[in-house]
Image (cartoon, rainbow, N blue to C red; front, side, top):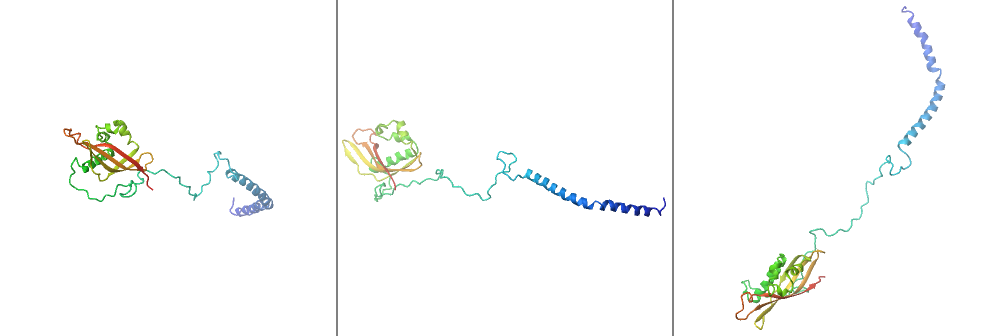
Length: 240
């Protein structure tokens, strides 16, 4: 091969390449139109296959998750029971008002009361309700006349009579005068109960009196000369 023949072969080949590249131009353009339409139909079919226009059944595993509202409407809160610790406070009626103790403004002596005095009887009532508030029912029951018999309840029934309450308190008023008869002494002490019911957790109020008795006969025992509870008379108070 000589260096002079190489340009001739290249020059001869160029027309052939141009003919091959250019001669079918019209037919290719026509075929491209058909192929594009078909390809578009196939692409649309593929799109529909992955993203269907109709809603799929909920049990279809390919179904998309249900739409969520980015700002959901608030739902009404149901009325709930009163939680622990949020309760109506115990607030017994004030002295001199309906359901309250007598408004006795007489100053009470700070000196220790003599056991046989009326104030000594009031101290017994304070002790009695203090024991009940502490759920010490046996010593409270024994403060009744006859070592508990005066209550006309067994110890078990006496204790059970306070089972409806979750707490039990009393305000004790100034005692009345001592009455005497047949060697016995009697005194009445006003009392106000403020308690809370277990079932409803509502306050419960009562007003009434406690009557105490002791013996004052010669030769009586020391136990007979101590004030004992003879009667408790209470009635409920309904605050408005």
